[in-house]
Amino acid sequence: MIADVAHDGVKTVRIGSMLGDGIGHEIVPATMRVVDEAVDAEHGPSIEWVELPLGADAIDTHGTPIPESTLEELKSLDTWILGPHDSASYPEPFRSQLTPGGVVRKTFDLFANIRPAAAHPGVRAVSASMDLVVVRENTEGFYADRNMFLGSGEFMPTPDVALAVGVFTRSACERIAREAFTLAQGRRKHVTIVHKTNVLAMTTGLFRDACRTVAVDFPDVAVDEEHIDALTAHLVRRGGDFDVIVAENMFGDILSDLAGELSGSLGMAPSLNSSENKAMAQAAHGSAPDIAGKNRANPTALFLSAAMMLEWLAGNSGDARLTAAAHRIRRAVDGALESGVATADLGGRASTSEFTETVIARAKRV
Image (cartoon, rainbow, N blue to C red; front, side):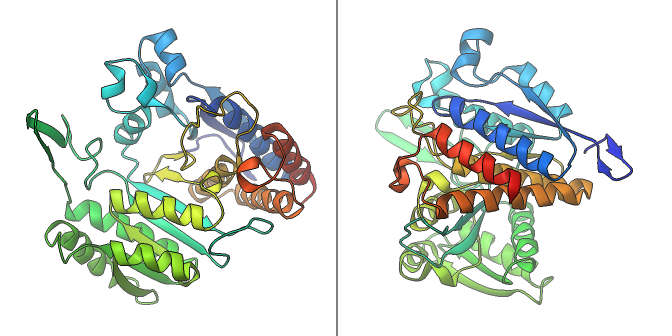
């Protein structure tokens, strides 16, 4: 909760900044500059950035990729930005442990992962009319790093047998469904429930039934259902027909990556992890170690994630200037892309810094 409030809105917002690994060292500082410019252009609150150690650098300085001091500091902050991390490259035992992002999600019960996918002007897209949001349950399902209070949902009783446990609870399914239906009310009032009940009748059946129960409270929202495998084909063929898609953890992860690429590039796919009182902006893509430090990364996804973060803050604080700043960021990004300024993954020639400067310049005047 934002505590420092002036009579005309929020006075100061304290935001955590975790660079992570790889291209995170380039795109997180770029995002901080864009946020500062957009908020300042709206005469918004003062932004206080609090940089916190996380990732490979934190192993060197603190002996762990996610120090306790970072988690403690996050508790006192209004919101956070997390850069991508490359836990697969960490030395053991850290490589086999819960990822830094996973620790943050679990510590603060960031149960909702909101992942928009929309085509942008000036960007070639497989699905040029796509404008949807995948609402992904972020704490349970089939992912072994998220579905156990202690231990892992994946284990091997013998070297030749591997088992996994999926966890679905009605309470978790209903709360993510409520997020999806609430979001749909502010969009085109259409929710698609994703399941695989012809094979996973009990687990994804519980997810489907919980979503149906919540749907009763939203009579103005149209509801349909799709099996996960059929939906992947439908997204490719007619991605523009979907509005809000609600899915369990793994299905939501796969669908949102697919939708991000269909709408232009995974490098443009934003994401917000949130609970009722905490939120973390995090791009859907990874750390891209192959281009790290080369000034080639596309920062768009994190720019748009930060815009989502500002809107979340506005909802918690009632400060409309933060909503206006979020809209300013989106207009600046779209203006840059439409003018032909784009990074290599979009077929352009702009470097990370060149694209960032273009967005900042536009954020001053849009």
